[in-house]
Amino acid sequence: MSLFDEKLIFLDYESKNKKDILKNLSKELENMGYVDSYKNFSKAVLEREKHSTTGIGFNIAIPHGKSSSVHEPFVVLAKPKKSLEWESLDDEPVDMIFLIGVPEKSADEHLKILQKLSVNLMDENFRENLKNAESKEEILNLVKNIE
Image (cartoon, rainbow, N blue to C red):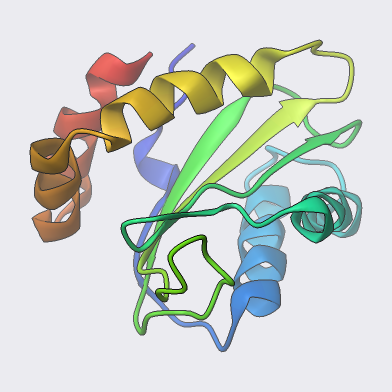
């Protein structure tokens, strides 16, 4: 199973702030059957955010949560319509969000996904190509090798 799915790419996503986008993306996931309860999943993600920021710099955030509500590991890619304040490591707002979800019992699956994603995001060309991508197809072509 692929971690990235065209249905999980959201471009020009309307959102007011970090909490709002995480809650709304969680609702989208529930509506599509990726999670049983958007409330439980968004709570897990927001609890994780309290420990330390997932804003890694380069205008990118990688929020993640382990929850019994998650069926299979997934990665959402959202580009908000307007940059969002995220308390990032470099104090810059975020314009690209990778939301990772894994089942509660899946040991360190989220760490493996984070590691693969982070390695790719350290590549400036990869980041720029992702930021400049204007369609879901372009984005899928860029991320398909991250599996």
